[in-house]
Amino acid sequence: MGTADFAVPSLHILLEHNFDVTGVVTVPDKPAGRGLHVSRSPIKEYAVEHNLPLFQPERLRQPEFIEQVSALHPDLFVVVAFRILPPEIFRIPPRGSFNLHASLLPKFRGAAPIRWAIISGEKETGVTTFFLNEQVDTGNIILQARLPIGPDETAGELHDRLAAVGAEIVLHTVRLIEKDMIQPKMQDNSSASAAPKIFKHHCKIDWNKPATEVHNLIRGMSPRPGVFALHGNKILKIFRSRLLSEPLRQVPGTILQADTRLVIAAGEGAIELVEIQQEGKKKLPICEFLRGYHLTTGDVLT
Image 1 (cartoon, rainbow, N blue to C red):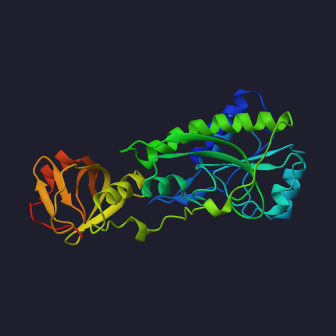
Image 2: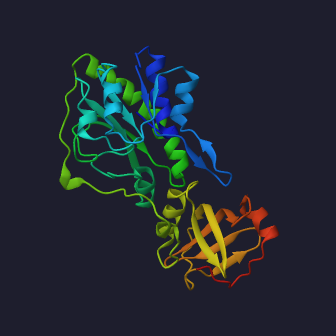
Image 3: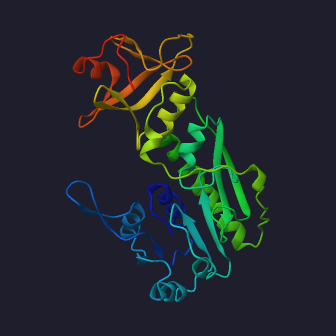
C-alpha cells in the first residue's frame, strides 16, 4: 500500500527478491496541473508496468474494498507513504501490517518527517518499520536504520537516500516476519516529537531568526514546496542557500551584497542565497538570476 515515489523502491525490492505481491493499493487518479490532466500515483505507474493487481478505493472502509482485499488472503500488509489505515483494514493479514516511516521514531511522528528533521537542525535521521495500531505512528518498532544529514542537504536529496535505505529495511523486516524472528519494542512516548503537514505559513522566511534557522528552513522545504520572501510586492522562492561564517550584523532582511552573490542579513549572522526563482519564472542559479532581476545593496526582503 503506497502512493508517493518514496514507496516505489520498497515495492521494487520485494518483487526483485521474489516475494508474492498479491495486490497493490494506492489512491484514485486525480486531475492535476493547470490543464487538469489525470495524474496517476508513482505506485500505480509501477504496478501497471509490472502487471500487478491494483486497487484504488475512494474510501478504505468501503465494504467492497475490504472484501476484495480479504479475498486475496494476504499474509502481510506493507505500507509505505500511504493513508492512515483503519483497524478493519490493518487487522486483515494474520502476520499483521507494518509501515515504513522516514524518521527515527518516536521522533517526528506525522506527515512530513523528512522536512521537519532538517528544519529542526537535526544532524541525523533514519527510517523505522513498525506495526500499525490505532494511534498514528505509535506502534511497536521492528527495525531502524540511521543516516547522517549533510549540512547543506535538501529535503529532496535526503528523501532519495532514505527511500533507498528504507527499501532495504522493508526487505529485512519482511524476511524477519516470515521467519518469526521479530522482537518488536515499544516506543518511548516521552521522546516523541511531531512532524505535521506543511502549510503556506510555514514557508514564509522570518529574517529575524538566526541565519542557521533560515538556512535549515530553506533546505528543509526544497525542492517542494519551497520557501519564499517578498521584494516589494514580488514573490521570490528560494531553494538553496549557504551559511556565512562571518558574524555580520545588519537589519534582518537587508541585502548586504548583490553582484555575483546575494547575501542577506538575518537576526543573527547572514546567509547567501544560491538558487532562486521569481514567481512565474524559471528556477535559476543566483548569478543568472541577478543578471535578469535588479536587486541593490540596502534593499530589504520581507
